[in-house]
Length: 103
Image (cartoon, rainbow, N blue to C red):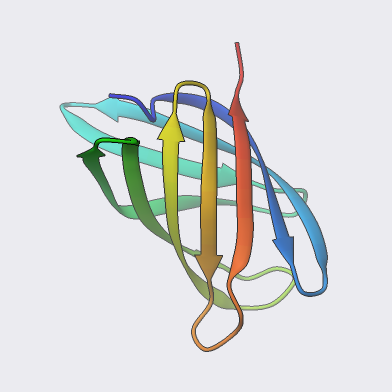
Protein backbone atom coordinates (compact mmCIF):
# COMPACT_ATOMS: atom_id res chain seq x y z
CA UNK A 1 0.00 0.00 0.00
CA UNK A 2 1.42 3.33 -1.05
CA UNK A 3 0.85 5.23 2.23
CA UNK A 4 2.78 2.77 4.41
CA UNK A 5 5.77 4.13 6.30
CA UNK A 6 6.81 7.15 8.31
CA UNK A 7 6.14 10.63 6.92
CA UNK A 8 7.45 14.10 7.80
CA UNK A 9 4.40 16.29 7.23
CA UNK A 10 3.92 20.05 7.30
CA UNK A 11 0.44 21.49 7.88
CA UNK A 12 0.12 25.18 7.06
CA UNK A 13 -2.70 26.51 9.24
CA UNK A 14 -4.03 30.08 9.43
CA UNK A 15 -2.15 30.49 12.73
CA UNK A 16 1.17 28.99 11.62
CA UNK A 17 2.81 25.79 10.39
CA UNK A 18 2.88 22.49 12.27
CA UNK A 19 5.47 19.74 11.83
CA UNK A 20 3.92 16.31 12.40
CA UNK A 21 5.31 12.80 11.99
CA UNK A 22 2.78 10.31 10.62
CA UNK A 23 3.17 6.55 10.75
CA UNK A 24 0.98 4.30 8.61
CA UNK A 25 1.24 0.53 9.03
CA UNK A 26 -0.73 -2.72 8.72
CA UNK A 27 -1.61 -4.76 11.80
CA UNK A 28 -3.61 -7.98 11.41
CA UNK A 29 -4.56 -6.95 7.88
CA UNK A 30 -5.92 -3.55 8.96
CA UNK A 31 -4.42 -0.23 7.82
CA UNK A 32 -3.66 1.91 10.88
CA UNK A 33 -2.01 5.26 11.44
CA UNK A 34 -0.91 7.71 14.08
CA UNK A 35 0.17 11.34 14.16
CA UNK A 36 2.87 12.55 16.55
CA UNK A 37 3.23 16.25 17.23
CA UNK A 38 5.19 18.10 19.88
CA UNK A 39 2.46 17.78 22.52
CA UNK A 40 0.52 14.59 21.72
CA UNK A 41 0.25 11.44 19.61
CA UNK A 42 -3.19 10.59 18.26
CA UNK A 43 -4.60 7.76 16.13
CA UNK A 44 -5.73 8.24 12.55
CA UNK A 45 -9.19 6.77 11.93
CA UNK A 46 -11.37 5.94 8.92
CA UNK A 47 -8.30 5.60 6.67
CA UNK A 48 -9.26 5.07 3.03
CA UNK A 49 -6.94 4.59 0.05
CA UNK A 50 -8.36 5.13 -3.44
CA UNK A 51 -6.31 4.43 -6.56
CA UNK A 52 -6.44 7.12 -9.24
CA UNK A 53 -4.63 7.91 -12.47
CA UNK A 54 -2.52 10.49 -10.59
CA UNK A 55 -1.48 8.27 -7.66
CA UNK A 56 -3.30 7.20 -4.52
CA UNK A 57 -5.81 9.46 -2.80
CA UNK A 58 -5.70 8.88 0.95
CA UNK A 59 -8.30 10.18 3.39
CA UNK A 60 -8.37 9.92 7.17
CA UNK A 61 -9.65 11.59 10.32
CA UNK A 62 -8.02 12.45 13.59
CA UNK A 63 -9.03 14.24 16.78
CA UNK A 64 -6.56 16.51 18.55
CA UNK A 65 -6.77 18.27 21.90
CA UNK A 66 -3.72 20.53 21.64
CA UNK A 67 -3.35 23.38 21.02
CA UNK A 68 -7.17 23.19 20.96
CA UNK A 69 -9.79 20.48 20.61
CA UNK A 70 -10.45 19.84 16.90
CA UNK A 71 -11.72 17.05 14.68
CA UNK A 72 -9.67 17.06 11.48
CA UNK A 73 -10.39 15.53 8.07
CA UNK A 74 -7.45 14.91 5.71
CA UNK A 75 -7.45 14.40 1.94
CA UNK A 76 -4.05 13.95 0.26
CA UNK A 77 -2.66 12.59 -2.99
CA UNK A 78 0.35 10.29 -2.60
CA UNK A 79 2.79 10.09 -5.51
CA UNK A 80 5.86 8.00 -4.73
CA UNK A 81 7.46 9.42 -1.58
CA UNK A 82 5.55 12.74 -1.65
CA UNK A 83 2.09 13.69 -0.47
CA UNK A 84 0.13 16.87 -1.09
CA UNK A 85 -3.38 17.87 -0.11
CA UNK A 86 -5.34 19.53 2.65
CA UNK A 87 -6.90 19.14 6.06
CA UNK A 88 -10.02 20.77 7.39
CA UNK A 89 -11.47 21.30 10.86
CA UNK A 90 -15.21 21.84 10.59
CA UNK A 91 -16.00 25.27 9.15
CA UNK A 92 -12.45 26.56 9.46
CA UNK A 93 -10.52 27.24 6.23
CA UNK A 94 -8.63 24.35 4.63
CA UNK A 95 -4.98 23.97 5.58
CA UNK A 96 -2.35 22.87 3.04
CA UNK A 97 -0.67 19.55 3.83
CA UNK A 98 2.64 18.43 2.29
CA UNK A 99 4.93 15.59 3.26
CA UNK A 100 7.87 13.35 2.44
CA UNK A 101 8.24 9.69 3.32
CA UNK A 102 11.23 8.94 5.56
CA UNK A 103 13.84 6.52 4.21
